[in-house]
Image (tube, rainbow, N blue to C red):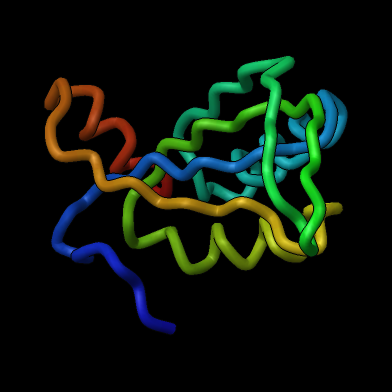
Length: 112
């Protein structure tokens, strides 16, 4: 699989939306239990507008902000895809360019 970020960048924020709180909590729990994320923020009740299969869709969702080492991305992506109810889940990885060094070290040590 080809990734559009440089694996030299050690940390990522992965963005994912879920249809409801139960899905968001469940997915976050699995990612934490499997050591694929250090921290996941769930932002409830966001309003999403998008085009799906040629139709405009509007819906309420829950946003997950998943902090993870870049080395976990491939496995994290697979877990989200396998457990997510959407046919095409939003999975967007954003490199963390800078941050509090101690916080980033904590993110990097989730599997140690």
